[in-house]
Length: 445
Image (tube, rainbow, N blue to C red; front, side, top):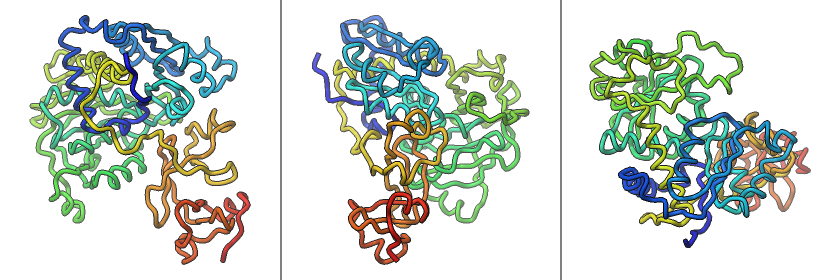
């Protein structure tokens, strides 16, 4: 088996749209007979390093590797590993991602941890969920399910409902839906709306615009003025957004329910959380809808609709095996994808900053957690003027109103003429004058 150059999957952005569709086609082949592929990855070993609880993600990965003919080693309880002794993720993957295993799947409670694993492991790394950041293989599974159920993705109206603030599956799924020109209707539980940085990225990278949405009667999940319509595929919606009129949702192709992510909450109440029931399913909007959920559910989907043919969440979980088979077979070089990769990877280095310089504000970011001892801030410029940066680990965005020169060690406000004369390769960004001085820079005024 000839291995390709190392391909990590930290973010759904690490796969091009063409590669995703190619994976779907391979997954369909695998799904036709799951027992027929045990020759593909014989001799390969997958390690699962799960620092958070999991049932479906870990077991579907392990099932996928076993069906490909490979072996599995697993660290499923952090209390029984060297993490409990204080070992860093970087050190762990340096050991495991080598002679121990040929591919590593990581789940970790801190945002951006999967990128750390990809940086330090010598073998391909798959993000099995990192904090509230992303869960790209769940996104692959979600897209694959929707593609199979609806015969395509473009132009679909997909409702994202519940905890949209802390759900990493929703964040990854929203980016992917926008990429494939699907429309998104958000119905969050109050106080758990989609994070501003997710909405900003949808607007900036995919041209998504937002308007108030009217979804009519959906008992149990929608209240007045609770919905928003996000579209990148219907130009006339831009005018609606400008006038702040309500978009009348005429149909729903799928509802993606999310549980309250209590492990990441700070004691917020979830009384009156959205719940799908038989009454919800009677709405005319729901006639051709598919009910999806990443599972586990708590009480947001009533058991009484499990047998409804529109409820596909258990099929969705089952499709995790063939799509993960396709992904790992590709990463291990057992199959090829007739598609070009994306121009940029989420693991490509950005701008490095010293410890005294700009730091990510996200307290859940791995750079402010276990990585504080060994990671240097790594940012990407997402808007040049006025400068706006995104953390290369967790994606959190922040403004940087002061720009310094790495050659003169002087800093200026971003709107000063001298600031714009600094060549991009010599720019250093700061959130405040105090931060710039702490890094050894002097006022260039």
